[in-house]
Image (cartoon, rainbow, N blue to C red; front, side, top):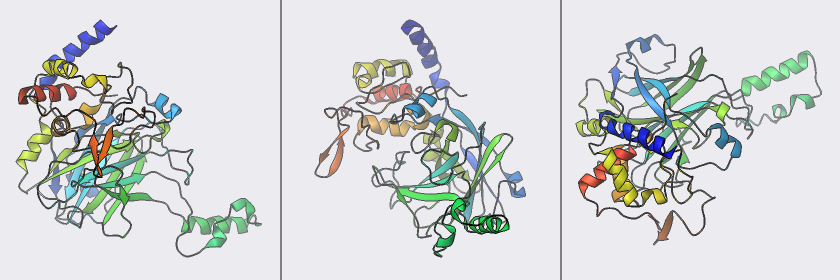
Length: 400
């Protein structure tokens, strides 16, 4: 079996040079305002849809046996993405197949909803490498817009409507009085689960609640699955979107207990604002894979002991000594992989697995800074690094 797997891998590596990253998406300029745009708005007829791939996030294994069983052999998903902008706002539509409509039921921990998120690279004082796709990097922030599909949920709304916070079976009313009570609760219920977060590295994700980010998102379920809409301003205190906008997109599947890090996500994708000057370097970085030799990269990776700590493929034994890399080629850019090899402490992946042995920590604290225990491979020559990056880019799940 190992020989068969090796042969299949070799075939994959031989053609890996022909595999390109996702193509850039064009955000079409429209004259009408995007305020109030919905999934069925006629203005979407102007948009150009592109196909992207969302890969299972597998760096950290969850401590949830059932969820792990449901996602053990998770495959990548295809999604359709389109973008519009009106000079003040940008709007994105994401369409993806999902065979079941899973809604969040209240705040119960036993139900899991479908959902989607769009992540933007935050504004910085000077040009920076793109952030870690999870929750940003120190000095390289991200803004994450999260939308979940949920039922109507009654929660305190600031009006102290305590009379409606009791269980309907304990109201002491029935018939029309109970119907009136249910209608009152429904009118006060929260029907939308939209959240916005900012992050700048390990354990830094913070919800924005002060209204400083103007946005709107929603989800609609149809015969072919979900359509998710996000509209947000091009510029605010957190982002300054112009020319080429890097975004990452994630979707959750409630039927597979998807939540938090258990999701499918894309790598950074370039969205070019039609009519504006593109960031040519960013477009090249996000649409072109490493030019290295993946076969040589696999040999170099093994020679340097990388597979002693990292799980590379699903067939490899699981390791809690370092993040799994079995899908890293799907949701990581070549630039991020290159940085991880040369500067392993630039980004310390969050979510250290509690199953890891205490003698094999992922990082050490030095003067308050997290320093990765991974070996610094900056001594490798450029060609070898590119070969390793080319191999890592081949590590990705099949598309369902």
